[in-house]
Structures are given as C-alpha cells and as structure tokens.
Amino acid sequence: MSAFPRCWCRRKGGISEEKQEYINIIENNNTLLLQLISDVLDLSKIEAGTMEFDYAPVDVHGLFIELEDTFRLRNKKSGICICYHRRTTECVVKADRNRLVQVMMNLMNNAVKFTGEGSIEFGFDVREDGFLHFYVTDTGCGIPEERLEEIFGNFVKLNSFVQGTGLGLTICRAIVERMGGKIGAVSRLGQGSTFWFTLPYTANEEKV
Image (cartoon, rainbow, N blue to C red; front, top):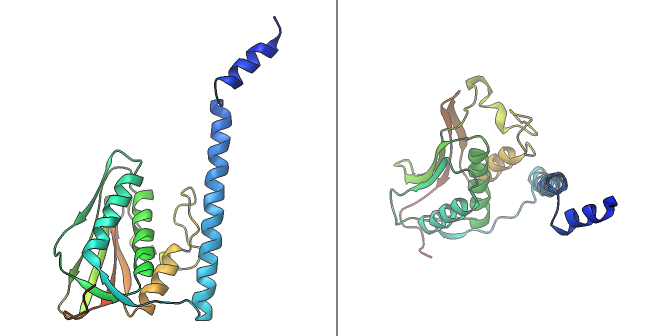
C-alpha cells in the first residue's frame, strides 16, 4: 500500500503537533511585532510631546473590578491567584481612563510573565498627601535591588527569554509623570516585586 493514503489520513485528522507549534510561534511573533510597533509609536509621541490625554472622572473601583475579571479570564497559569484587594469602593479620580488602563495592564502583564505560582494582588489606597497610591504585588522571581532603577529605561529586559519589547515600563513612567504622579518598584530577589505609582487626587473629585 502506498504512503499517500496514510499521509492523507493524518492531514484529514487535523494539524500535526509540529505544525501547530510552528503556527503558535508565528502567532506569538506577530503579537510581539504589533506590540513593538505600538510601543515605538507611543514612545515617539512621548518624546515629541504629542501624546494626547483625555481627562475625565474615572471610577477607580469599578475599573479595577473590570481588570480583575479580565485577567482572571486571560490567566493560563493555574498556580496563580489574581486578586483585586478592595480597600475602598468610593473613589473617583480625574485622569485619562485609557492611559490608566494602559499602565495597569502593563504592570499586571509583567507580573504574570514573571510569576510561576503564588499570587498577584493589585489595588489602590488614598494617601494623606493628596495622592492615590496604586500597586501591583506579585510572588514572582523578583528583581536585583541594584537594577530597580534600570528597568524603567528604553529597551531594558532583565530576562531575554521572556517575551516583551522592553519599552512597556518606559511608557508607563512617561504616562504617570505626564498625569502628575510618580512610579517605582520595590523587590527582593526570589520573593517577588511590588510596582507602584501615584496620581493626584482630591476627595471632592467630580462623580461619574
């Protein structure tokens, strides 16, 4: 019997594991390329001072509930628990909602990338100094203390084997500073990291 029928049956039954692996690689590379293009465009706008911001009242609590649902659905690591730590349910801040989401998504995506198991907790609290304090805490691999400032630089990747453009944190810093806040990180190698940022806030912000 010729090999043709056997080859036909294998194709008819579906894509081979090897071909599926190639397809996955192509899809991942396409995603990375699109992200790189988007990040480079954002960085160009930041450097040219042309990045647009649309300020409006943002219900932070409602937004974070949405983020929790989104990341729980997207999370493919069964060993990670993603949790929004609810400290207050009444908080409206005047900010660019899309840019705020962009910063949070970037910080949480990084946390997922570098956490094999354990937890990722995020939330916010109101500080007495007139700022909202946002944070994303993970139980991941951590960052050497001497490299904490370096991670906000252009094209910096502490792990070349993890997918990313190396521009995300640079863009986060620019967005936060443009909205009047600060950004930073604390970490212990092997014990996890906390990325935080602040935004100006007054208790009588207009309600949405």
